[in-house]
Amino acid sequence: MYIFITILISLSTALLSAYLTDRYAKSRTKSEQLSQLQATKLAISAELQTVLNLYESFTLSPDEPKNGDDIKAVRISYKYNTVYSHNADKLGLMDKKVVESVVTAYTYLASFIDTLTVLADRWEEMIQAERLRQDTSLYWQDVKDCHKLAYDQQETTLGAIHQAIAALREDC
Image (spheres, rainbow, N blue to C red):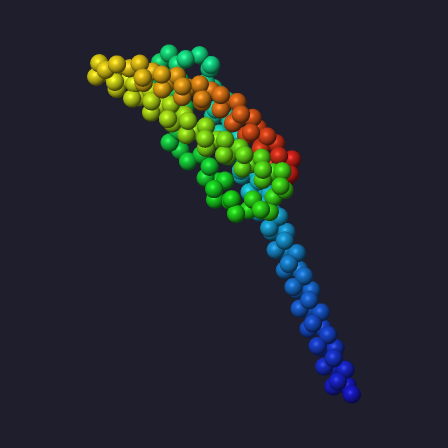
C-alpha cells in the first residue's frame, strides 16, 4: 500500500513538475517573442527615422534644376531597407495598422528612390550629350518631367514615413 502511495506521489510530482516546466518555458518563449517584436519595431522605426533625417535635410524644390548638384545629392547607392527586409517575416505579428503604415512607407520610399535614380541618370545623360555637343532638348524635357514626378512623390513619401514611425512608436 505504501509503495502504491509513494508511486502515486512520485508520479503526481513528476507530472506537476513537467506541467510547470512547460508553462514556464511557454511563458518565457512568449516573453522573448514580445521582446524581439518590440526590438524589431524600434529597429524599423530607427531605419525610417534615419531615411527621414537624410531626406528632410535635403528636399527637392518645385523649381527646375539649375545645375546637377541638387540631383546628385539625392542619389542613393545604399540599401535603405535592410532592417525592414530582414524582418518582414515578423510583420504578421504586429498590429494591422502598424503593418499597413510600415508597408506603405517602404513602398512609397522604394518608388521615390527609383524616381530619384532615374532623375540622376537622365541628368548625367544630358550632361554627356552636352559634352558631345548634341541636342539636349529631349534630355532636358526628361529631366524636367522626372524632377516634377520626384517633387510630387516626396511629400507623400515623407508623410508616409512620418506616419509609420508614429504607428511603430505608439505600438511599442
